[in-house]
Length: 252
Image (cartoon, rainbow, N blue to C red):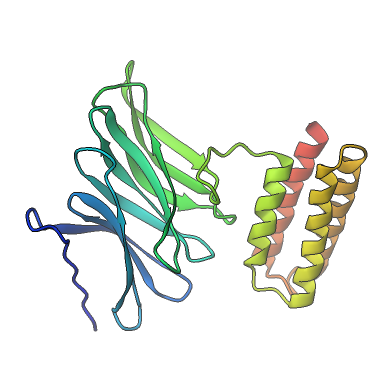
């Protein structure tokens, strides 16, 4: 058994909390909470309890903030959510992404409802899909209804609002594919088909037909390797993702 305890750097009000934990693929622990008055994510080695890094999520105005939930993507990067003061405008529904290797803050989003000033907008839970895109839930304060049940989806790479297009979905799928543990030759072949589809969408004349052909070849190869070189659940997920892109191509 090991035990790890940390304390904040403040000389007054020196207290800290942990609200949520997640474990990455190396069995290291990502803990979310805060060192008053700031939020924090701490990475701890699962085998030894040694602190690998700790990342402070600063309050951008007067007041304090805290992270209450955390999730880890396939690359080991962490996404935390909580509430942070933006006095005197509001308390913000906050989502932040932290690099798993270094603790560097990759992006941060503050979301608020229409009730200002002093509206309380709180992110309470976070989950990531297989591509690493972010679903965050909580409530937003609005002038007509006070507190509304709210779920938002954000691009995992940038934190921007998730507005899917065939090209953006292809690029996201391409990034996800690189993180899969597949045989090198198979991975190279699948990547080449996605790259061909992306190039097709970048072309003005005949590009969509070329992209559709490359995606059809991608699906055929995935199905051929299902339960062989590609696990069943992974293969089915890849086919579903490409099918969604094809539908968007046909309807655009």
